[in-house]
Amino acid sequence: MHKNAYLGLVLVIAVLLVLPFVLPNSYYMDLVIRMAINAIIVIGLNLLIGFAGQISLGHAGFLGIGAYASAVLPTHFGFHPLLAMAAGAAATAVIAGVVAKPIFKLKGNYLAMATLGLGIIINIALRNEAQLTGGPDGMPVPAFGLFGIEINSDQQWYWVVAALLVISVWASLNIIDSPFGRALRALHGSEVASQVVGVNIVRYKVSIFVLSAVFASLMGSITAHYIGFVTPNFADFFHSIELVTMVVVGGMASVFGSIVGAILLTALPQALATFEGWETVVFGSVLMLCMIFLPKGLVPTLAAKFGKGD
Image (cartoon, rainbow, N blue to C red; front, side, top):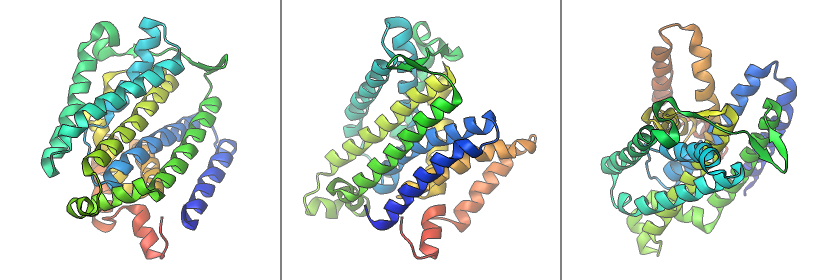
């Protein structure tokens, strides 16, 4: 990792260490936990969209698979929560790997529609399998425990999610700086040129799609245990669009932009709650202005202005 990335990681760690001691109440603690969860998902999605240049409009479907794996497997089949989480991630990897190869033969609008269709199929399956998933009403999720310790307080969940965020940032920065990451950036720049220099574009597209899907699945499981209840809304189209918007607003091809985008778009609906009946209009206006004046996203635009890279 180059110097700026290293300093950014240190800053993230420092902020996470200080935050729980300055937050005034449990409401803000809950909000920060949700921000961190979204940030991890968006970091994985940004590897796919920002660095590899491959769109996904159905990513919330993988979030739903992880969430329901952590609900269904312990409830109906007696799985340990950690084993259920791993099984959900494995199932997500298999599904993503199977569908990725035919999907990534498509480009542009066709690729977007294919990933959108995949997310919708997952959402419909979760709604219709009522005997297992509870249907549209959802189902409760058993408590998460590790080494005999049950994680049930906001403080405990904060440290779990904070540790996962640091690991995700560190891993993503190292992936980007690796030969794999350089191949992804080459793929984004030009698929033809990448093939000429020996990059197996199908293999790299499938690999990053699977990795990004596993990020979402694991955090779907974490979210399910944290909230204690899951519904098919975890996997709906609007959630997928929200995740993509976080990538775009924060900054594509920017790990720290992913964090900023997740923070802003998790907090913004809460801040706009005072605009009763108009919050959606104000939310859309904020996003539109951001795209007009910050087309590359917040972090890359500011980094370019002040002459610093991510």
